[in-house]
Structure formats: structure tokens, C-alpha cells
Length: 104
Image (tube, rainbow, N blue to C red; front, side, top):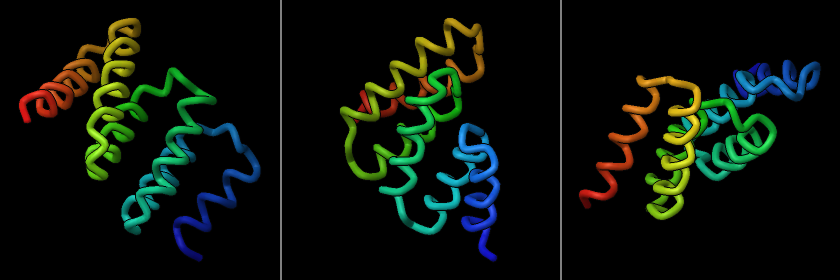
């Protein structure tokens, strides 16, 4: 059984588990299926907008597809959330990612 299959099986018992959804997206990214990874993380954010790590990963996935406008927007939303949560580490990472796009 592949890791994707294992995670999907676990998600059947708890489809709202944000960590498992995030893990599934990472597996699809590793399998070079960025569209599936993006779809999963977009759904994760819709269902759990406070899952901060998803914003950075989604921004990276958008960047890889050269969708820089989408990446910038998602990084900005993540920065706002990180500020609200007082998570300076995540905020710094998101700000750096945004800055790197703006430098291009």
C-alpha cells in the first residue's frame, strides 16, 4: 500500500483531519502531481482557515506553476493570520517568500 493510499484510508475515518490532508498534499507534490496537491490544500484552507502551514506550501505550489499573483495573495493572507496568531516564525517565512517574489 502506498503512502497516498494509507493517508486516504486514515482520512476516511476522519475527513476533517487537517494534518492528514496536508500530508496527502505533500505526497502528491512528491509524486509530481501539483494540481492534486493544490486542490487538497485549497480545500484544507477552506475547511480550516487557521492551519497556518498550508499557506506557505500553497504559495510554493503556485510559484512552481508560475502563478505568482496567486502565490502573493496566499502569502499575504498567511502573513495576516500569522500576525493574528502571534506566530513570528511563520510570519517571517511568509514575508520572506513574498519578498522573494516581489524582487523578481
